[in-house]
Image (cartoon, rainbow, N blue to C red; front, side, top):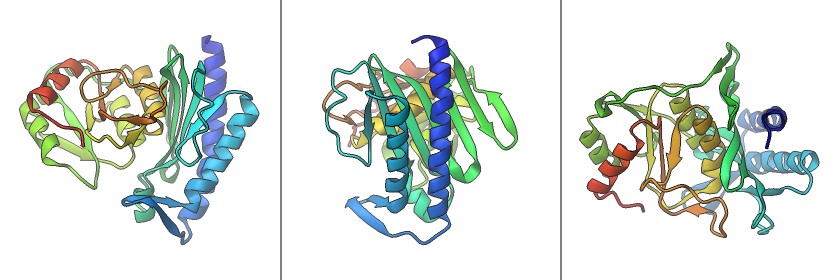
Length: 275
């Protein structure tokens, strides 16, 4: 896909995310009922309303193109398609319910099996990360807009790790110590963590969970790659967006790229298991 078409699509998807963000904020300021899809996996009316708005807009603007979303049934129409939209209408529902602002709307486009375009919007902060392959990545907030680029640190003890606010288990601590990392930042939402790497605030995020899905990774992966970073599974393998299974069974590893292979070596040496 030519850069001009990617740029056009990126602009349109930013508008879609912005409209969904306005919907989510209406629920954010009100009491909202919570349902549970599974233990530890909440869903609210905000998730569903944002989902409906995003999917409707994608179908209208990009007719005939497949869409996969966390809050919609997977009709498998995506299989064998060259283009696929992947949506998480509200990543960080737990953070949304805690009212800490660390939740996001994430929309990504897969082309030929690779995340090529992404938008991650943090509605509570009016912050948007966006980017596409061959074009670049940017961050926009009320203070303005700037180009994103990962750091160039080439020593492991220079790295800063970002982790979830809700957990930091002994597997991650073993890797941290082996790499000589001293600074750990905290944030909700995969998209916001990857945004922190893309903007140069940190260099590493490890998510050793088999319960991470395509919609958790697609948009952030496209933005991170456009900013010079890398996202794989924890063993350094490319993430699959073409199969029946929507899960990344070997977790996620996001970094600024320069030491990605070294980080994988440490993860393997420490015997980190994905659960």
